Image (cartoon, rainbow, N blue to C red; front, side):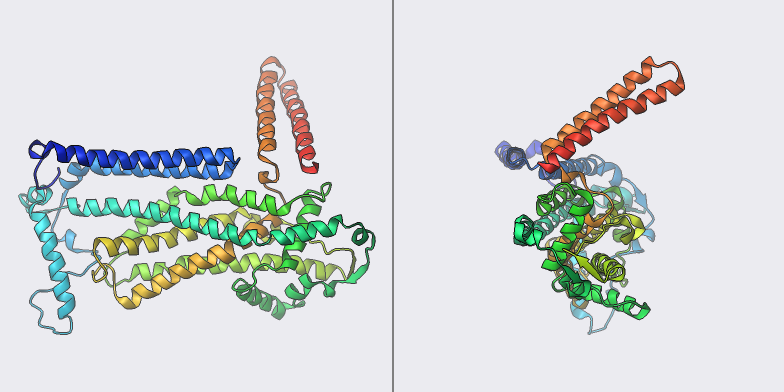
Length: 491
């Protein structure tokens, strides 16, 4: 069902060929850009970014499939008819009474009437409306509304991918500013005079403790949370924070390699996380459905929804800052004076539910919900214009935009860099600690161990002997993998 208008039977062939050629050229150009971008990332050995690009391709394929479904089932959806009274409930825009004499709403009435007349004109040429009108009903979704929904889904995906890429780009730029801290810390460790001349210092004299430790007590514990809340807005990570957390990570996970480049590892881990953030998971699509359902006239749902990513972002930033504060408190409460540098002890106990990965999940939700807010604004602005009733009142629209910009800026320059360094303070390290070739070597050893374990399991007859053989085969291969990993770290 294509609605009114001329069919291909009576359309000039040059028009059809020209339009088809333009679409094909644009599609091939986009495909080639993605292809050569992938080749460039492979050449530069940027495997995490290459995997993120593959994730973007998957999202584009999903969008194409959604587009295909909407196009193929357009006729079927148009022939689903509902009662007319059901069509007048839960509307994003109120249907104004044309007999109203109120002069205060004259302008809004005029704009709404003009929009409704345009819709009525479209419905006259919509076969689905005529089909349901014969039964005294209205279509479930008109061809025009289906087309607008089609555009919205595309805009949402494009805005989400774009904003995630900008967030990672600006956040990475912020983290790269810490490179000189890494260099200065490494130079200090290589200086033999400073290494030999170790002295005892009072814990309270360290800058890390001065900036983070406020004292002991319930009142001071509450004050530390307040301090963490405001700290995320200015100087979220200082040099003393970076040097101390870096040393704590190296002493816990890379004790045999004092030359370990913590900054490079942190950047690799952030690039790996980009692949997870840029995707649109199934639960995020549930959010989209829920948000579209709640967009009812008078509820100002999109205004209140804008506060969800904002509040989550503040909570995540506060928690990450408080993790650093907790590390400082642990040292200050246990020691009065220390020999040499201040060392903290990373632990999963400082994170929500003892899982640092939850922070990445929350950042994923924050970025998507913020993208949804801004995508809705751009879509409505282009499709219905700013004065449309679906856009809402100016007093609700402007705060939404301001909140969206604040969330994007704060996430890029504060929360994401905080996440990159603080989540390394867990009990375990990430696989990004190894170089790409080492990761591939470990993966090969793991596959060989698995295949050998299966082979041993087939030859063994006794179940006890079978399990023992499996464990021995796995242990041998794990020892070899650990040897390769340790050699790469100490190299």
